Amino acid sequence: MKKYCLFIVLLISLRSSAQDNYWQQQLQYTISASLNETAKSITGTETLVYKNNSPVSLNFIWFHLWPNAYKNDSTALFKQLQRDTSRAKKLENPGRGYIDGLAFTVDGKAAGTELHPQHIDIIKLLLEKPLAPGDSVRIFTPFHVVLPTYFSRSGYADGEIMACQWYPKPAVFDKDGWHEMPYLDMGEFYSEYATYDVSLTVPSACVVGATGNLLTQAELDAYKKTGAVNNSDRKGKPVLYKPVMTTAAKTLQYHAEQVPDFAWFADKDFVIQYDTVQLPSGKIVDAFSYYHNKKNTIWENSIDFVKDGTRKYSEWVGEYGYPVVQAVEGPANNSSGGMEYPMITLITSPKAEKEALDGVIAHEVGHNWFMAMLGSNERMHTWMDEGLNSYYHFRYEAEKYRYNSVFGDQIPEEVKKLPVDKFMDMIYNVINQNIPMQSAMETPADKFPNSDEYGIVSYVKTALWLYMLEATIGRDKVDAAIQNYFTKWKFKHPQPADMQAAFEEATGNKLDKFFELTRKEGKLE
Image (tube, rainbow, N blue to C red):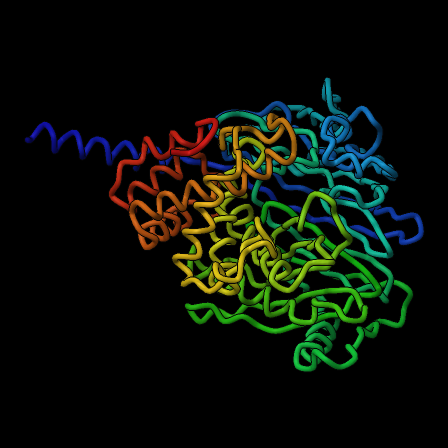
């Protein structure tokens, strides 16, 4: 018995030590950028303070130059689209984009670079002397981005600017080494947490939604005042934003902390809605939605959807960690309902019905938990992001509407009349029995045979996997497991083993066999 007790103490000690040894890099951006509305381009400068918290010295830093993914037909982005017939429509008239004008300095001295041997959207910044553990460097470069037409994430369409993956950005360096990766349409990201101070110069008539707090007080006041009126009177003619500044251009200041990315969206046509969300703890969060000024839009209730999603995920997973939450209406995307960024999400389902729009907004807002606050490697472990989020997204739709986005309006009325627990059981049984999901959940994004399989497995199979655990140990324990995982790993980079350990700690269950299912091809059973 004494030996057994000593073994348990040793095991707990080892786990504690592993957690104590965790590290991640520390980044601080200062970006100044100007939009040329006519040329659909962005010109800017970036200063990055990069602190090496790893236990090894670094001789170089990989940088992502993701706008170059749009430059020609030989990039990883275009090769992937050419292979995937379900996304072939994206290639009909793809306007090109790129990034140039780079001139890196490190601590004030010109620095050399090397091209990646395969990908023009990755570059190696060479350091004159090794960056020792605990030390920092100040990296500076100007840059110029030409935006593509909108067919993936970044771009422009119908007067709207979507600046996503738009600035030079270091790859993640973690215990497994560097994670430099090309931009893909089917396959998301893995990014270091950082503080951002960003100034954006845009035409004065533009309404801008962006990651972070808007610090330009007069502009923020105008958004809140206009948005509050539109929130209170949703059936009347919307009140449109009136430029605060009389000059042709305005400069807006933004600040964000503990975020893995910074995105922004601009349009002269946006209607603004504004309200606040009170979370269970009493915390107040600013909520905005931005949508196009058109008749009979279902976006008139969008602010409620933003608020409800934020409130529900805070209740189920853990408190929302940011000061503002926003949703932006974008152009149609033939393979996506939206694309999430910290504190703001682009919604690309303009023809959705009310239930579908509410669901996709909740899903994309939910990525503030499963992407922004839990910074897993989405390219390698898509299920840790999309799947966990879909599990709660499906719960949200079921509780609110007896609806599920997998089936849309095909759900029989008699099923919609079921109590929520029986409704969800029916939905998941139909999924399990009728939808083929061959690939394993633990499949890297670029290894799925096509985008249909990627979507079904990463989103739906993983939600089913979690529901199977719920059916075995109960919803309360699943929520406790997720909440423990969130508490331990928010603003960090968890791996599948970290999730398993957090689940086991919270539930008291050994879950080796359950997590082995993430590597299982075919039906879950």
